[in-house]
Image 1 (tube, rainbow, N blue to C red):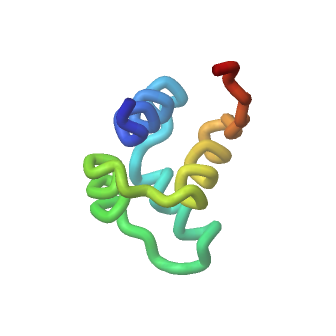
Image 2 (cartoon, rainbow, N blue to C red; image 1 turned 60 degrees about the vertical axis):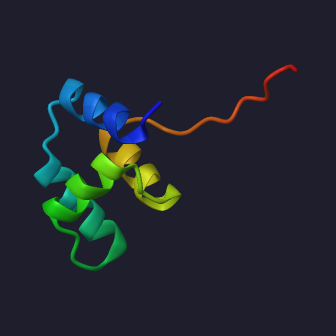
Length: 70
C-alpha cells in the first residue's frame, strides 16, 4: 500500500485539493509548506507521521492502531 495514493484518494473523495491540504499543513506547522512539497512527498511516500496526522485531521479521519493476531 502506498500511503500517498491512499491519501490522494481520501482527499479526492472529500473534495479537498492539494492546495487546501498544503495550506492547512502550513497553518498547523507554523511554517511554509508548498503544494509542490506535498505533491513530491505524496509521490515518494515520504510523509512523516505528523504530516499524515494533519492531513487526516483536515479530511475528517483519524489513525487507529489495531493489534493483529498472529
